[in-house]
Image (tube, rainbow, N blue to C red):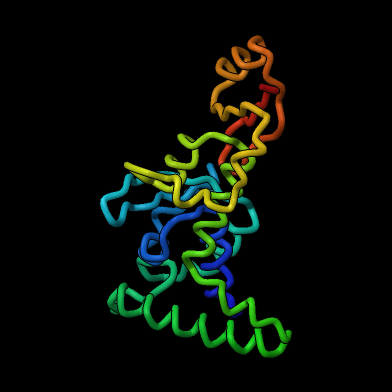
Length: 191
């Protein structure tokens, strides 16, 4: 992929936002000090601030030119330019699938990255409220966690933001697992 498409795909996979939400990202929405990007809601969702890794931040910073938007020019219509970007992605994906002799690569789409992000986030945190907040949903989030096997769940997991909440969980018998890229501390406890 080219630089622009690589930055777009990396940010999609790290944030789990919709392609249209990310395509409308403005330069002023990137906070380099806090490593966050502000996502404006699309399709009656909630707007949110999402934390990203340094690598993704560097890729976005390289993309941000003198214009107002990160991924398209000011004079371009956002929806139309996103359609062209999607077509370009499909062409490059097909070429790569032929080159690597792997037709399963053709199954990957922008939406696949959103589903993957939601599924992996739920798998790590076991907290649907966190997944719902990350995706900006106001209603159901269950369809995005379809890759996770719910029957073999023998852990209770929680994700917290503050150290006070973390102390309460450790006193309740939870053990610290990891910190997510978004800054949440993940804890778990056997059922």
